[in-house]
Image 1 (cartoon, helix red, strand yellow):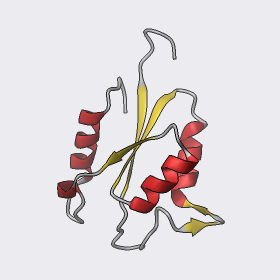
Image 2 (spheres, one colour; image 1 turned 180 degrees about the horizontal axis):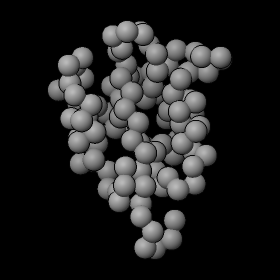
Image 3 (cartoon, helix red, strand yellow; image 1 turned 135 degrees about the horizontal axis):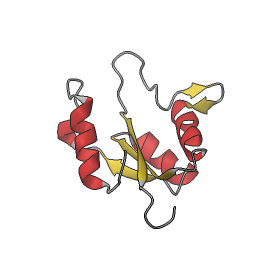
Image 4 (cartoon, one colour; image 1 turned 180 degrees about the vertical axis):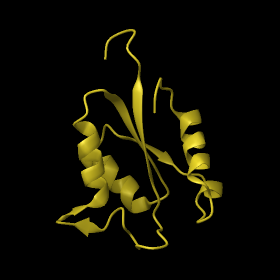
Length: 103
């Protein structure tokens, strides 16, 4: 990215707990966890300056840190972890943590 270009950040919310599909974000799918497919796809997009994962999952935090060290991990606060928390509130929190032109 050169000076003057917009800074694009990919925000990737991933909860540890899922109501309908337990462990869906880290459960193997064709040999790899779902989050690996997501992050690999985002890395292929040259316009994205930074990838940020918002999670409360110790499994995802550890795996992302070891497998994708350039990905920034935000620890989701307790008040944003419930099943009834709107995604807009999670994204609003993330936007307050990361500076970008576009998300």
